[in-house]
Amino acid sequence: MAADMRAIQPESLYKLHLECEERPDGRKLDAARATVVTRGGITTADGSAFCRSGHTSVLCGIKAEVCTPATDAPPDRGWVVPNLELPALCHHRFRPGPPSEAAQTASAQLLQLLDASGALDRTQLCIEAGQAVWVLYCDLICLSHDCNVLDVALLALSAALTDLRLPSAEWDATEERLRVKPAERTPLKLGPLPLAATLAVFDKETLVLDPAGDEEMLCEASVTVAWAGDSMVLLDKTGGCELSLEAMDRCIALSKKRSLELKKLLDCCTQSGEVEKDE
Amino acid sequence: MISADMKSEEGDLDEDTINNFTCELGVLSQCDGSATLCNVEVRQQRELVDRSSIEVTFRGPHGVEGVEDRRVEQLVRSTLEQCVFAALHPRTAVSVVLNVLETDDLLLLSTCVNAAVLALLDSSLSMKYLPAAVTCVPVGDRVLVNPLPSERQGSSGGSVTAVYDTGSERLVACRTAGQLSAEQLTSCLREARRAAALVRQLYRRAVAAKFSKEPRDPWAGPSRAEDMPPSWRRLGGQQTGEQSTS
Image 1: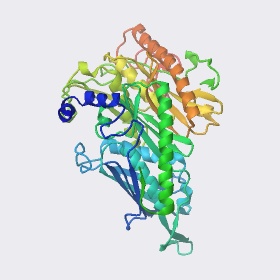
Image 2: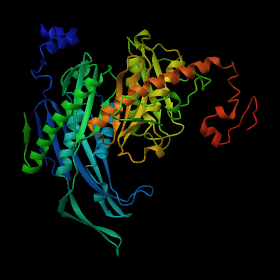
Image 3: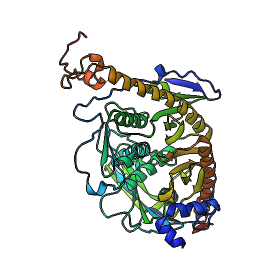
Image 4: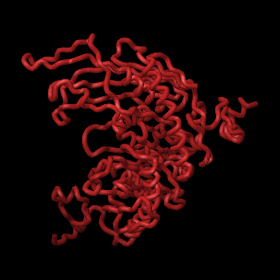
């Protein structure tokens, strides 16, 4: 009967769940899904991480290439190019072809989050000012889309940046060429990494953390808040139903709590270098 | 520029001091209003059977299209989808095209939202409410609303663009940039709510000005130098029709 109701009236079925303060997958309203982070899975990449939260999973690989800085750009800064791909295999609503609007906006958001958090000082990517800088191509691929891709992608990107090891490179001024030693690698010095939490809003007041399944489709609005340390680096509520300021304050508090959990997870992962699981 | 003390309830907001808010309706003579409502077939993949599909196209001021443009389009579109009575016009499309004449990165988003709303107002499309967007920047203890670059010195780089339903004073959409603390965000949202009411008064003025104008030949171009958009004036735009001494 629940299956029939889900097909015909998914909103009503979901509201019945909310009345019992529980969600279809058994979680409480402010509980997030179990998150797993694995670093270093792609040996051919300079840095990589795989992150899974429930059924949403994103793989991130970072390749570093050398480039000459553009004439209108600062000569002593490298740059980072995050690109999230939502291929047809991750969910039936995505078709093969050019990147969808969702993928493009997510890629832009990831770059904005890295910039706003100040996690990566671009001057570290400079080899020789005006001649050679590193460009980090961060390719993120969503392998399975079960809502909330941005949070998972951001976690994968942050983890991959901690896994990144740049080869040592020197600019030979006499011969005007670069000497790279791939065997000698050093990690980057990173500031506080951005971590995001998304909440779905139902009936204008009920907040549900880490939407999954049908929740993203059924919700009236969704709010994404990203934190880097103690500073908020993004609050994005794009359209949807109206929200009171009290509900917004609750969003901020819940997302802050979740970002602290994610930070703990990421720190454990960085220290131990192994698979870390957060229940 | 408007500034308000973060700690006090009273401020000195005044509609004349909302920064450089100029708008003119009906500037494009070939369209119904300044939104394009064309009598063309909706593309199959965009057609929705129970409602109108709203498309927003944003063209940045320079350079090629980028993924940042999609973010602007997403915010504007999601705001309009909520406020327009789309269900009244099934299997149609509302296409809003935003072209940037002068740019200020910080104020761009709120200006785009306001321009789109004004265009829909001018086109007489039914709307449930009028959204209004403002950008707030916390500088020290104060919150500045729609500040010019010179007024933003000393800010830590954080800003909040908030879109409010001017009728019920509830937050419709919000996007931040840069770093903010939770207290700064809350103060900015409160200040934005007050400023949005003033933006609504400016909408009212723009509509009143449109209907109080003498009907004029749409091919004549702007009749006074002051009516020309700033970019035209810089190019030494030609005046036709009535000449004025300037």
